[in-house]
Image (cartoon, rainbow, N blue to C red; front, top):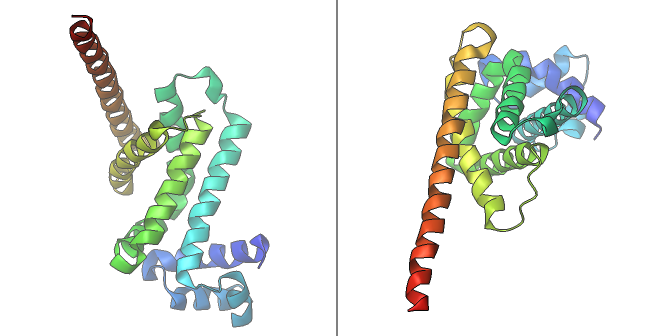
Length: 205
């Protein structure tokens, strides 16, 4: 199994997957169209369509990381700008494969595929926060990724139907959701701080 062979099979399959979904049949047809034999498909993706979809998401994570590391100075941005930039770069890169992404969501919505879908989502959220500079190792490490997953999935729904220039509708929605989360986090921090001060007065009595 080599990335080059996986890329060759996957690239040939993506146009078919847009119509047929993530199926072994689409992979087999794509393999033949690419001038390969079924033995090559088994070497590339021994787990079939499920493994091909997993590789598709891993490759998207890698491409996102390479682009952001090379072309963006994330350290100079505020945290909300970093997150918005990272998510929009990822969605922009996936725009040519929007139907494959839609089909992937349908694949992961099946109960027996849900665990793999959750792993893929968590891996992407972890990569986004890593690129944003997050170093948390306590419970915040998990809460940040869970909150971002909710924002990301909601934004993905808009993106799948967004025909605006430059994905303007998607970006506007994403920024609103991020602002809402940031405002809630500030409110939560203030309540926690005020509560601590309130109860500390009783401890001094």
